[in-house]
Length: 143
Image 1 (cartoon, helix red, strand yellow):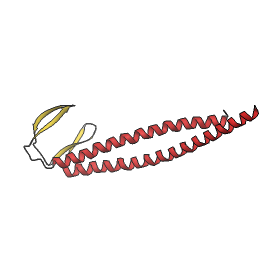
Image 2 (cartoon, rainbow, N blue to C red):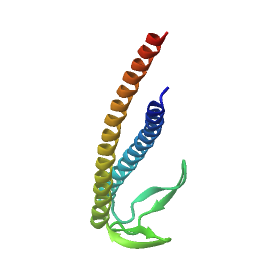
Image 3 (cartoon, one colour):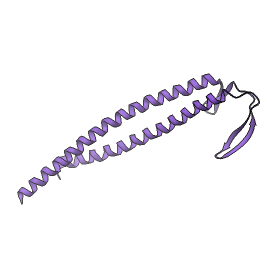
Image 4 (cartoon, rainbow, N blue to C red):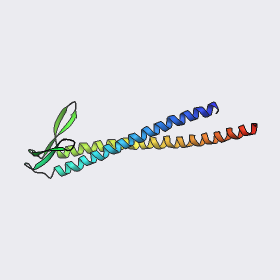
């Protein structure tokens, strides 16, 4: 195997790993987008509740407590560093929708990058196959 072909093969392997990482990032973003869209649906449903409504509140995975809703117009939103602020349902929905847009824009860039790298990998793979056949033919001619 020639030095040039070895370099291309190493590059091919590195790019294959990069494609795998990009794919995993895209999947993680899809999961986050699904969760955020579910939050918007939940907030829209929450708007329909009235003060004093009984509800189940999750304490841990699969564990719920009965609770009475004391305020139906506002929620507390975590803003980081264990700090939360009061926000209206509408403001919270807008905040989540902004996060969805941000993630969606980032996903679009990742998909474009994935497509670009994938096209280059296919081209590189074609070159490796072509070069391998050429070297094989040359080796047979020498025999």
